[in-house]
Amino acid sequence: MSKLRVAVVGAGPAGIYASDILRKEAEGSHEVSIDLFDRLPAPYGLVRYGVAPDHPRIKGVVSALRNVLDNGGIRVFGNVDFGADITIDDLRERYHAVIFATGAMQDAPLEIPGIDAEGSFGAADFVNWYDGHPDVSREWTLDQEKVAVVGNGNVALDVARVLAKQADDMLPTEIPANVYDGLAASKITDVHVFGRRGPLQVKFTPLELRELGEVPDTDLIMYEEDFDRDPAADEESKRNKQLLVISRIFGKWRQNDAPREASRRIHLHFWSQPHSVLTDNSGRVTGFRVERTEPDGESGIRGTGELRDYEIGQIYRAVGYFGSPLEQIPYDPTHGVIPNLGGRVVGASGEPLPGMFATGWIKRGPVGLIGHTKSDAKETIEHLLASEADWWQPSITDEDEIVSLLNERHVRYTDLDGWHNLDAHEVELGEPQERERVKVVDREDMLRISRGE
Image 1 (cartoon, helix red, strand yellow):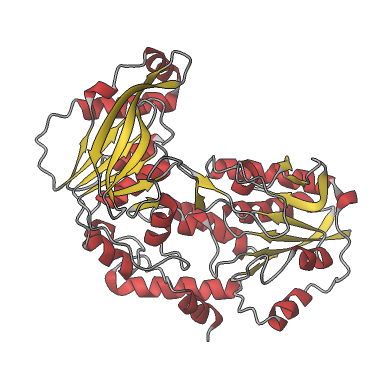
Image 2 (cartoon, rainbow, N blue to C red; image 1 turned 90 degrees about the horizontal axis):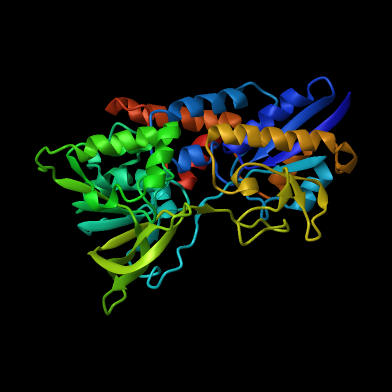
């Protein structure tokens, strides 16, 4: 049985599922060893640092990912930065192939006048803050009463929900103390969510929408002018189960005539295309201008020329994520992905490059949920196993030599035992407060706890 050594760069769902599928698919034909690298000290990627902490269903995903790692056969090297601590040449000398699963963690651009004003933020930065990402500032100032969220996807609704929630509503989750303090100091009274299309052309799921309507002490406000404008979408919703559920949720909310007495409000604005950010003389956000849109009769939208201004003190753009380039690896700057054919990385000429593969959002762009990630990984692994003739031929065959290399370069890497140490510590921090865990934020603290230093 031939030996197959694979490096996987990125320890989020895409990288972990690809590792698991590779082990299973190669069984009987290859003796497989897999080393999983991540630039963060803890694994799970977007599940740990990109999903709102008040999503209970995420616990099941974390449990599944943990089971994969704990089953053995996959070594984990955290706090290892590809391009700095290890290079593509290092991997080529030690492995037959590499799978890039680095995801997409930066915000896609929203190119309108004033978007870079003070008080205008990318949603990913805010998500990283409330999820306790070690590489972002511990401070976030919520000093404005009226804020805007631009986008109609799941991330937009996550951001709107967290902005509208009282700090105590988030306390049962794993948020660290600095996030609780930031939310407790919030002056927000109104969160305005803007979507450029109609209410039945949204990208969020029914579950996200329902959760938005369950925020305590918060009134949900919609505007009748946004509904019954697109007969084609109304007909489509009758055939599409997800849209039908969304339509029913909206219908229920529209019929709610209860007094609006909550301390905070979430406003849903549809048919509202971003036009520009309004600022004062110091360059700080004072408002948001949108252009009203309408159906174009061809499943799209067009501008009406009608402009509306909203008094806004902060803006959060949630118009999608975008992948980042990796050192010496092909990159498509238009789509924020590694160019590939079914997961095989391709060069400038379009020809597959030996030994290099991609999976997850860095392969296909930031779309799809966990189910898509699994099927995506399966396609990549199938191509990897079918291209044995193009695998690298490593000159260093000692599996422990990568450990020696990291030690020689003074990389303070973490391993699976280290993650278990950190995991147990976070659970212990939560016990006095009857919380499942309290997340450790500081990178140095994460390393110290993981490494037992």
